[in-house]
Length: 191
Image (cartoon, rainbow, N blue to C red; front, side):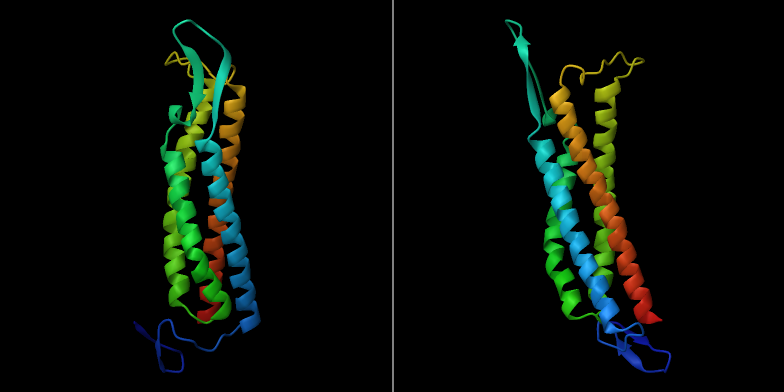
């Protein structure tokens, strides 16, 4: 474990408990808000991955040789994979978040969560942005590339994938809140 000097000149081990300038109650409140936001982000990424992964629609008409069908594999699968990984990380980070409620003065676990939260936010943003561009093309098409919009025919499918994007971008917003909460908690401890 690393060591640091306090203002009084004492050597302190990182991750150890020390005097909290804003009070233990406020730090515990931040830890509770962190846990609630983390649970909400877990549910958002899980529901988003499930909705996208189960989205499919078959048109009521077909030709003799083919049937018109749309499913999530027609869009970038990176979105489902990214949301699944982020959901797994969020689920595994819940015990550490609960630990912060019990041990509010620990700095090292908060720093670890901050670093991994930033990496998970980047992954969630990349997955949501990739899917958003594909959904945009599905709704609007691209005249220059001679791609027609297929959401005029597959409207139920397009509504489902649009809904999954809302959950994913909600999780990105939740990660922003988690990062701000972690930074505020760490700055208030050190001041």
